[in-house]
Length: 93
Image 1 (cartoon, one colour):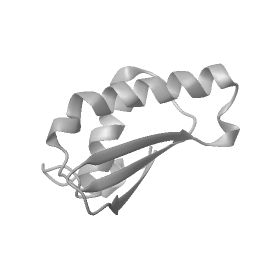
Image 2: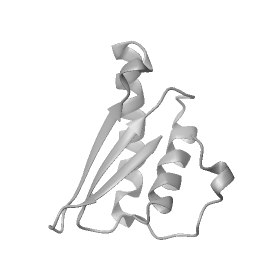
Image 3: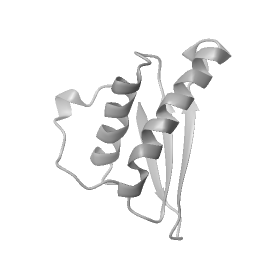
Image 4: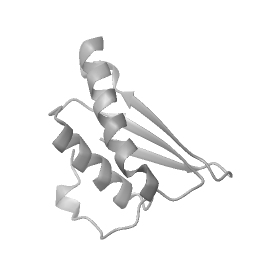
């Protein structure tokens, strides 16, 4: 998973979930989008204001536990969410 963060000049936080084209069928892409969207919904109250977030989803294990951990990890690495720093070795998703 990759995260792009862009300041938007407002107090709002907007999020976009984009699976790569080679993810698989539409069913798999939509499932991945729903899982990451729900994982983000549970942590969005901890994300700082004034940002546009683009989550780029790559094929992998589509379980809620895995995707939820990836969402929190990329948000912390990008500085969009407070919390301890993550190890660089665990960064690959």
